[in-house]
Length: 264
Image (cartoon, rainbow, N blue to C red):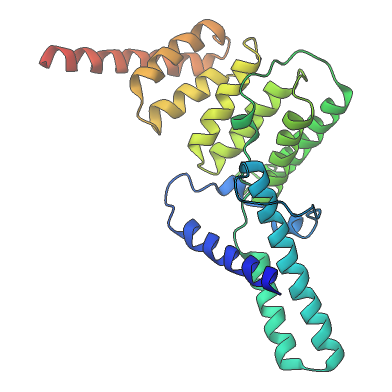
């Protein structure tokens, strides 16, 4: 019982902290409601002195324990005929299932030095599964299925985690970046775009352009964006629309910088 109470307190504390965030809210990292009840149970770990992965696993255990306890209460009150308490337990369970729950591990953050080198059929299959989910989520022009996008994101991250030498990790990183950008998680989107060209300098995707755009528009890191736009023109110049945009921004940023220097 003590463990269940602690789990409940942890979930409430997390919800308060989450409500305080206004930027980079991690919307893409929210767990889709349809996947929450399929969490696998894992052994209890000692949180004191543990690393991020161990602590996150403990959070998953507490979430699952709390949910299972509520489900047992619903079943118990159903058997005893206590409709009032069964209603309470059902409401609490429903609230738990709709409460924001985040996946705190960001694979691109943990694995900076990968190389996209090997053709791995299993990795290819995961990537194609992710792309199909991604396609289904975006099949309507103006309305996207955010839950499906998050599940597609899971596939891309699963590929990166399980097959870090796959020649599809840059593809997965780029597509994941697009999803994070959709959710306005710009810091994470930038990281994944950067990983795409770091993991495969010859990636077929306009990852440098996308990273430069985020640095330019959302991070206001003009000088860093300028350098990356210039690099993108050399490495990814085949994307004509991006090429024209980058050239325009290079002229504008350079002119602005020169104007600032002349006034100093």
